[in-house]
Image (cartoon, rainbow, N blue to C red; front, side, top):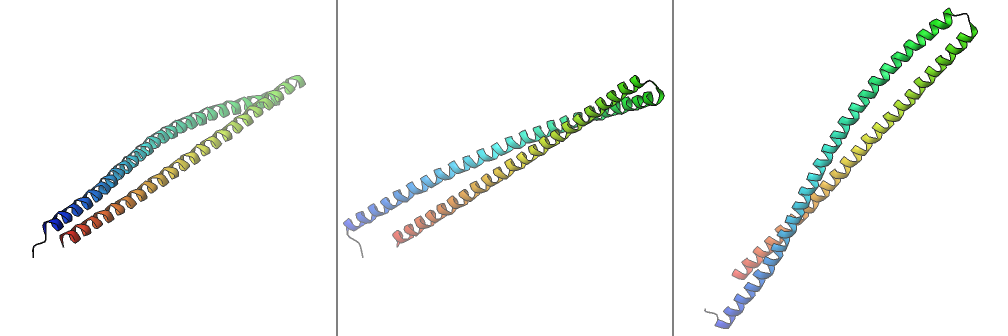
Length: 175
């Protein structure tokens, strides 16, 4: 049985309208997927930049801490030697004035040693804070990447649904 010409024309128009509608949706979904992929790439790139900066800061902090430890060790050694020499002077000397002077020098050396210990504690606190900041940044970027992945999965699922609907419509049109 041959359909009349008007129904053929009508069928072709409906088919063309449906194809255009779903083609537009598919193109918009593809464009959205491309934008999301670009955003994911940019997030990953930013993460790599931050990791590099973090490693650089870690290297600098380690170098700084090593230098401080070396200086501290040298100064403590010098102070211990000075302390020892002052102790020897105290033991050898009988003059009260000299003993007082040496005790003041000893107290001054102990005070400087205490200040250095305090400075070392503060530097350790700063290092620990930097480590915590690093961990916070890594967690934040991991969450952002996971959100981007989830968004991409949702968009891919939506795209697959639209393709399936389009295919079903095509099959229905062919029937």
